[in-house]
Each structure stands twice: as C-alpha cells, then as structure tokens.
Image (spheres, rainbow, N blue to C red):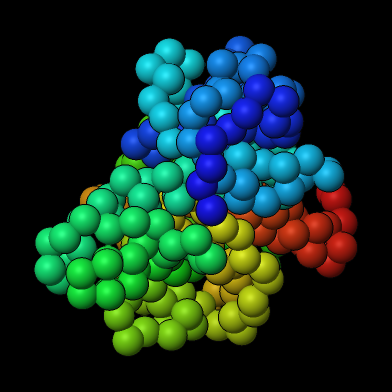
Length: 259
C-alpha cells in the first residue's frame, strides 16, 4: 500500500521511471529518505533486504537514471528486488486506464494488481517465460553472439516461449531456429527473474544430437563450438547464462581434465 515517505524512513530506495533506475554515484540509494530528498513523495515497501525495507518510488529523477543491469553484480536478492521494483513501476505506468472500459484504475492495497472501480476488472503484472540452454558436444559448448548484444560477448541460446508450447518444446524450437542444431537429454537447472523487460528465465542443459551449425542472421551474428578451456568473452557473473556456462565447464573438466 502506497503512503507518503517520511524523513526518517530508512532502507533501500528503488526509484524508477520508464524502466530506468535512479543510481546516484552508480549505486542503489541506501539510508534515510531525507538524505536523498525522497521525503514527502509517495512510495510503497516491496520487500526487505538484510533486515532493511526496500521502497519503490515511481519518479523520474532525470539525472543518474540508468539500467538495472548496472546492479547485476550486487547480491542476487537485492538485484531481484531492484528488478521487481522496475517491473512494478512500469506495470503501474502502463495500466493507468482499464483496457476493457477505458476508466481510470488504481493500485490494489493487498496485492500487486491494478483495479478498475467501474467494471471491476483486475490486472496483474504479466511475466514472459523464456528458455535459456547450454548445449554440450563432448568437451565443447555451443556459444553464440546475438545481434542485440554487440559487445563481443558470446553466450548460450535463449528465446521466448510461444503460446501453447511447453518449455521443452520451446528449447527444441529455439535451438533449431537459431542454429539448426537438434538436442537431446534436456535437464532443468534453475530459473532467474529477468527484468528486461519482464521475463522469467528457465535454464536448461542439453546434449548435442545432430545437425551442422547454420545461424539465423536475424538473431545471431555468429555461433561456434568452443572447447571448455578455450572460451571467448562470456556473460557477467550473476547471470543465469554465466551459471550454465560455468556448470558445463565444470562437467567437462571433471570428465576430460586438462591437457
């Protein structure tokens, strides 16, 4: 439930607008509300981190607004709370009016929802399920450079789950569409909330079954098999992609050792 933040309110402050995050001096604000001129504005508590409240404030600070990616190297729990705040702020911003009757809506006092007092429709934040998969072929792993990541980073394959599709079917389809590779022995590993903009990554490991690499140029710049101890630039720590690559490297090292 939103309330006016007071001078002595203390904790972490997720100040967000249009999927951006306020990061004064490159850090999440932590301390007294008065120290950041946040007293007198409306906010709501969205969780706790290390015994301190985490507040969401929907406000454009104009300066020092950045991406939640900039805090990806913080503790996982705090990064997830920052991501939750950014996603909720965008949800509230994009649901000011009811999609059925057009009347103004207001936030629920008891849950993450927007309510229409006219037709009583209730809206919840939508989450887009995605798959991400590390594919192993003996002592090699399939890594690709994506068209949307022009920073030289090579990572595992990923994609959105389509309507009426299981996670397993999504893995098979995405891998085939992007690389022309068929996989087998799919194994679930973990999941990660991914606020870019509102995804839930479901991570898998798989083994190569058949096919030669033929990339989809609309999705990938390059894709290659890399030996586990001769990897290119890979994603940052804290990402589920990095976890999958490191798990695959550990499995290869245990089986093949080093030359």
